[in-house]
Length: 239
View 1: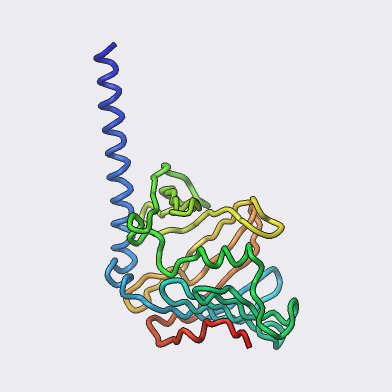
View 2 (view 1 turned 90 degrees about the vertical axis):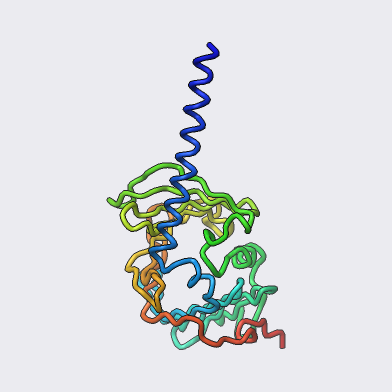
């Protein structure tokens, strides 16, 4: 009985070590293939220009972000501009079709989602951020063999990433919806058309699905890195 227990313990330890080694190998290949950790750590701002599609409607949009968590999205809709932003303290928007032409704080649930978003990949220095990663196994995503990696953030949020087994880059991410009519469902974000931008590999096409149905597509045309963007660009215009 003791011998059998020892064998089981050795097998468990070996399996655990292999799992830990495998997740480290996956992330090491990932960072290497997207341009290297040092280049990503040196990234301070991004500005992405492209088209945003929702059903039959398509809009021009600009997505701007600055470390550590500032963000702003500008979308032109029928000659009107919709702005949604977070300045590090306040999440706000201007939506002429819903709240009028003046800037307003966004609803609490939506604001929390914006505050939780990070500028850089959540896998960069994830241990220092208090996050944990776990290799859940292998899974096929629309015909592509992937490694399924679970990311648990310090605040308890969980996201599942699916890394292509050949190139070790994420092609899909799952996360729970925490607000709105679809609250409780899972959203799936697909990443494709990776292109090199100043030595960094970035997806130029994103597709968001809920329950298998496409809700949004983003086709990027230009990505600018480390351009000078003042903090005031994201600031909530109180007056």
